[in-house]
Length: 121
Image 1 (cartoon, rainbow, N blue to C red):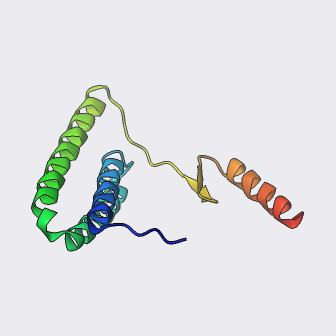
Image 2 (image 1 turned 180 degrees about the horizontal axis):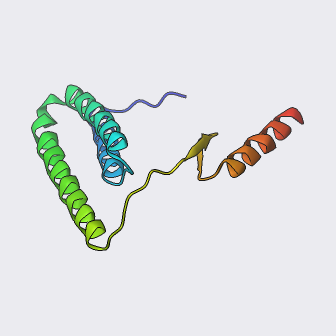
């Protein structure tokens, strides 16, 4: 089913996606993920600007404010982590079926349950 949106609604939806990506980037575990999420956010923001060029200036100001907020939050987090001697370590995450698992055993169990359920249909 296709839902028709006005240009304004479409642009606002894209800006919402961009903000969500920037929020996720601020909480990303490493710089690579942060960079990739910010790139996705930039694409959403650019698409929104193309839909509504008149609102582009307001969106750009908001985007800059969000970036500043993210950078400030990241700097504060890094300072707090250093203050308390907390070290960031990479963690393996297993993705399957749209879910994230912190250990291979749980991911495998979910995949096996799904295979059995699919076979019994």
